[in-house]
Length: 133
Length: 387
Image (cartoon, rainbow over all chains, first blue to last red; front, side, top):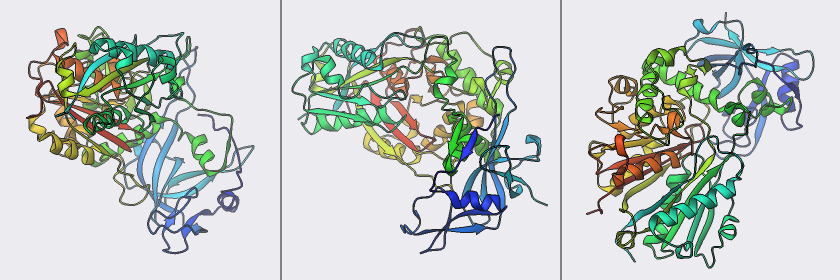
């Protein structure tokens, strides 16, 4: 399925800076060191509101996945399905991303993954995970 | 003061591909029908609760549109698919505390447009996205179907639940719908039909997904003593509860494995003085077949992880051990958020379900589910006063 053009929003730019540098940059609580997704607005664990940007190591495992199919058009053809996943980073938080380099039949909960980035012709990069090793 | 609260009136507009009426107009029609059903004049209403809806809401301006004056209770409420149960509980609490005497609760929506696929009503696609949240939306994490597919897959991975077991829910629900003149989809389906229906978001086939409907449904809540003197058999409110688990997106999360029914169910059943074994009829929010399975587990009708096997045993359909979604639910009947299970519960509790009437209807459980399994409400209804 088509991914629209992705632009920065001024609030999560360090994630895209990291992506351009092939690093997975997310949030970490300055008070309790717990890691969170890049769009976290505070730490639900300790209640702190000081979230820093920090590079995660990129290792993750598959929690669950879905193959999203587009609506067939009037001629009966449908866009290429999208392989969506919730992954659990080694640091603990779950991220939403697409899977790449693996077929749905090869998926199982717990599958080791590694972060990567998709490079569209226009706009910012987007987050992918590929089987590790 | 009153010895209990009851649903005294039920109003339902035409449901489904109903065009040309705004949500507010549909809501006004449903409230008029519900008041008339109870044998009340609109001027007898002193409370109005209006549900949020996908295409906005009729708003509390609905009171003015209906010409209601000097109300003692008026609010718009939103807990997504749990709103209907939350509204009825709020109305019952107001009646029991003497704040109001007759409260209408209404849901209306009109997301369908002529000549537009029903799925388009819930797709918020755009050409350009912004920031990290925009990135996930661009990747496909804007589709309710996708989130429920992720939840369903997690249940399958953890407990061995199968697509065929989801299909058993779809088939049983359609068997009930075939006996409901109000249901939008009434032609029988087989497990093969389910398995052969197109993928929407794997592991969910088209026949795992609910309808999209235009229309409105309202109920009127009064004190039990007053309801006894009105036009229709009272449906007594024995218990209610809410549950909002706040699943975190991090290690240890139960996303996909449990719902807020683990909280709302025991609260409502304790208030009603019942256990799951006392429930005769279940009306569960079935936006997807999977939500039926996971809700059944969380209410304690089967063990955790055994919802699939429970459905595949034939328990849910006509003649089964636990009559569930007897009007065809949201999968085959009509999609009016939490008013779908609530309206069918009222019809069954009154004994007015015709061909699909279940013989035992002393205790009816109504379950609402909203967000992505984030919000739950439970009602326990009965044709008998709570003793």
